[in-house]
Structure formats: structure tokens, C-alpha cells
Length: 298
Ligand code: AMP
Ligand code: MN
Ligand code: MN
Ligand code: MN
Image (cartoon, rainbow, N blue to C red; front, side, top):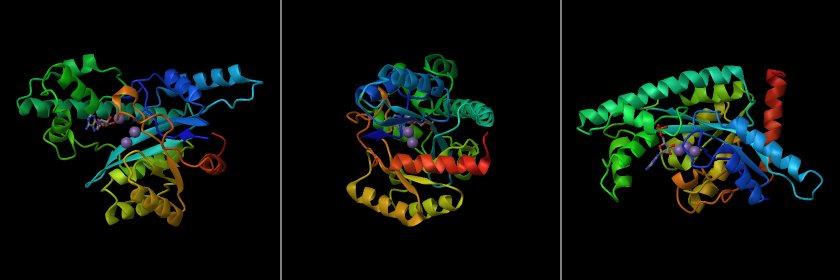
């Protein structure tokens, strides 16, 4: 049975609505799907309701309805690389998490404005208002929305999107501004505080499987990290084997997912196609339950 523990909806930068994504997972016969939008839980209510509707419709039938796991993917930066931390089995709604995410949304808007200003200094005629008006959601504004606005304004030469994104927006790029308001340790704490299981996303995208990447995983494990995203579209077979071993050595739960963004994502990656083994789910649930025992009922 397949599961997908890393997906994005219209609440951040995916193209499927939360309910639409859950229905897609249901049609594909997935055992579970985690909704892990960037820096927001705005899509969770709709996704959880769609999961419940699917369960009700299937009551009494042989098929197992898809389990919807409330999650998030928090963006952080270190001096050397971007670090994304997934939170799985979050309590929802959890007021302290919502309050911190409100502040993060404001920080993200200020950062996005700073990137637009840098573009203007480079001679790119893009107005902040254009980005703001063309953004599909106000809950997550960043590089993807700025880039989309640039494309709509024909400020990117056709066929050179990849190159342009790297030039302006890769870490250290001409218009890049880091996510300076949250570091990986704080992200882990925030997730633990909301009863969620913190998992390091796509370790192969850290410093591409280097020893320093592994050191960072070890450091974060000491700070409370509980899982490692071993199964991921851009991981080579060698990396997958390496990260599985690293997870075993550090006592981390190996997870996996597609980083699904619908039509805004990498072409050809189908929901559920980078599934961890089914035994991952009870391990994650047990980890979440142990957090609940430590932190109490609420
Ligand atoms: P931010 O959190 O504002 O730094 O924006 C990060 C988002 O930019 C990611 O979630 C991706 O969806 C998007 N992104 C990253 N690399 C690329 C790329 N090469 N082309 C288009 N979008 C990208
Ligand atoms: Mn994204
Ligand atoms: Mn990510
Ligand atoms: Mn992601």
C-alpha cells in the first residue's frame, strides 16, 4: 500500500485544492496522504474534512479510505544551505502554532518585497503590486509568486526559465534574500510544540549528500529531529541507500514523499510514487503519541 508524506496544495504553491488533492489520493487508492504546505496550515481544515467525507462514503465497504495526515513544511536557512523541516501529525488547530505562522507570513511578505526591490535595482521593471495581485494566495508569498509574475510580465526570455530562476533566486543569487526569521532548531521546536513529528525534508538537496550534510542531520537529531525523508524524487539509488543507513544509525524514522505540486511541480511525478514502506505509518503515529504523553493532552 502506497503513502505520500509530502504534498503541496493551493494553500501554498501547489495547483490542486486541498479537497481535490485528497480526492486524487483516494482515487489512486493511497493508504495515507500528508498535506505539507510551505509555512502554512491554511489548507488543513479543508483537507481533513475531505478525508472525513471519504471515510463516511466508504463506511461498510471493503476499501480502506485514505488517511489524511495534518502536516507542514517549514522553510529555514543556515549560513550554507536551505533546510526544510516537515512536521507530520500536527495538532490542528493549535493556537500557538497559528500565532507563530501569522508572524512568519508577515516576515515572508517583507522578504518578498526586499527581493522585488533587489530586482528593481538590477533594472527589472517589476512592481510589488503586480506580484501581490497575481499571487494565488496571500498565505504564502515568495520566490515562486515573484517568478510567476515575472513570467506573466514577459520579463523572462522564453525557454530560459530554469536559468533565470537560478540566476536571480538560487541561494546567493542576484535577487535572493534568505529566510532569516527561522532557523532549523526553532522549526523543530515549533513542530514538537504542536505535537508533530519533525522530519528533515530532502536531505539530498542539503549539500548534496556531503559529509557536512550528514553532520547537520546528526546535529538536528540532537535537537529533536525524529525522521528523515529517505524516499524522494531527486534522490539517486545511492543516496536513498545512504540516507536509509543514516536514518538507521541515528534512530530516525525513514519517510518519503513526492513533494507533489500538481501542474506547478516536476513533470511526471505521480502522487504516491516515492512511498516509504507501510511500517513507517505506525512508527510515526507512535512517535506522535509519545509526544502527546510528554506534552500532555493539549
Ligand atoms: P521561497 O520559500 O519563497 O524561498 O520559495 C521557494 C519555492 O520556490 C519552492 O517551494 C519552489 O516551489 C519554488 N522553486 C524552487 N526552485 C524553483 C525553480 N527552479 N523554478 C521554479 N520554482 C522554483
Ligand atoms: Mn514549493
Ligand atoms: Mn522543500
Ligand atoms: Mn515541499
